[in-house]
Image (cartoon, rainbow, N blue to C red):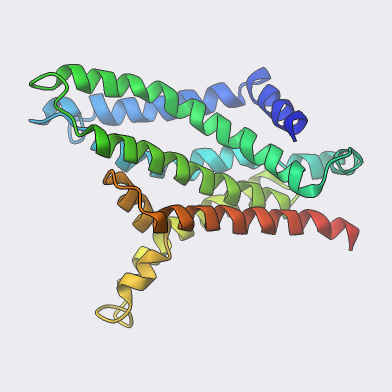
Length: 243
């Protein structure tokens, strides 16, 4: 599994993929937080990083599928998936190697945003007037969100040999799992009856919960379940070649 992991990481950073992903992610967040007047924290009367954690999921919906779309689709298209299968690795190890490599790239993209935290910390009046607990929770929520999106993206890549098709499918699934249940819960048939339950099926509900700074075991179980389900589906998709 480590061999696959380091191979994928090397592929990301030996080409422009890794640098483009991190650069675009930081550029968008920088514009939202410091340039656009409607969201710039310089126009706020209090120190906050809410803009970062509000916009990051929207950016991840497109950036993470862009990272994962080549995971298996490229291997299938190039015919190297069979070569990969001849290595002394199980399908689960292959999937986890690619999963953790893509997740590592997402975490690398998040690390520079700590500079935004330091900036807001210094701008606070008094200095350091921030809800650090909520910020830590929000970062944990973002990493859990990234892991869920990576699992979805890797699955989308495993069921098609076309990278563009994989990207489109992953974007759709990420959007559906994140916001789809929230929109579904607002339908008249659910409002006032089971709308809360429907919302709890979506990622947005649990991401918002973690972002408050309180780690609830229900949220942890939810993210682990989502990741586990899509990883299992990816392994099943790889096993199709043996059927």
